Length: 264
Image (cartoon, rainbow, N blue to C red; front, side, top):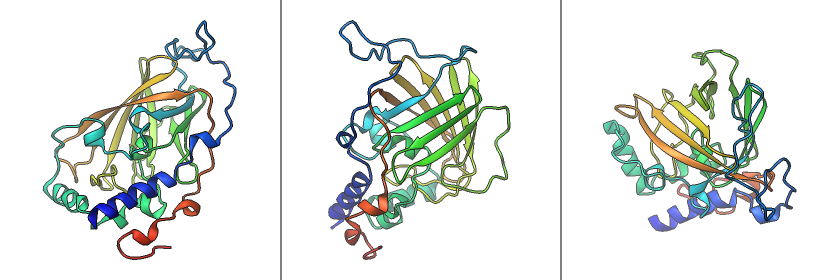
């Protein structure tokens, strides 16, 4: 029964993500090409007049091309995660499947940061100026995340939210983003790693060439973990795609198999 429940959740997450092949191919604009006419993803990254990299584009985590939801420990090779005792115990309970209906993604609610960045499906960085970035997420009905690079501090009194309050600054060619103000209602990954409202996420975005970006992610939540821990995510540029409308409530077809009965 536990296997059936876990499989149902995996199917649930996948049906919420659009199928790439359904979208008409879009002619790439300003994409460098190899001599044989293919996108040159190893070309230098585009830059703003101030010399900073332009992160604009549609990106997808390389570890999700098999369509599997993210498990940061297994997929991203994180070892020795420093859990608080209560968090370790809760994770072990969640592994059994008895808490699957508490996962926000099963209820068509956002998955939070950084899980949104590692979920199946792509996300689009829109950088209209060197001082402001918006990330659009395809999953769960197009969510957006604002990153302010105008020198403001992280708002300690920001209303708690699913994606938090993000500010950024440049460290050479690396964009460093601090995010706080989470509501504590989501799981860190598909496995069920706990977080609380004290979560602080630090991301370091480095576009190493035209088609590849490394994102170093640090989880700092003293209520759930005894010390901060870090992992690396690798994302790839999609040069001929656009985001699709994805309404989770319309595609959620397996709710009757979740614990607790029919949630519709």
